[in-house]
Amino acid sequence: MWFFAAVAITVSAQVAGDAPSFTGDEIAIYRDFLLHYPEQLSNMIGMQDTTVAFVASTPLRGQPTPPSMRPPEYSGRKLPPEVMALTDEKEMTARMAAAGKLIDPNKRGPYQGPDGYVRTHLTLSEIAFDQ
Image 1 (cartoon, rainbow, N blue to C red):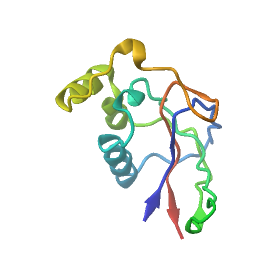
Image 2 (spheres, rainbow, N blue to C red):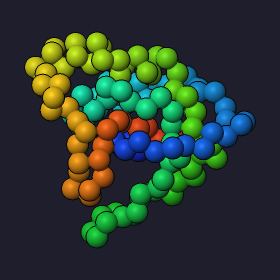
Image 3 (cartoon, rainbow, N blue to C red):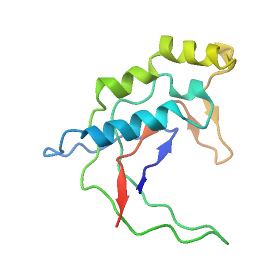
């Protein structure tokens, strides 16, 4: 089972000098997530091209405890072209049009969420696998 977080805030990431290249499985997971992104598709336009550190979630009241995660020891890896291609403005506009979800460019962002943070770009974390 795999987990990773997608947050819509721009965060600076620490690049580890010895961070490994993306595996085929990691690329497939990121692509699958972006192809089935559950939020507003326009959030992906201009996505940050580097990953940020994985931060395990804590259970909210009444929620089950999340699985024990061993987060990656690296972050700040540049996402491969086959992942970034899915966030290209032309690609996203075509997908939104095909889905009947075109949004007026003036209404695309930045968006201020209920937590007060201004969200401007989708940011993907490193992928962590449960133990």
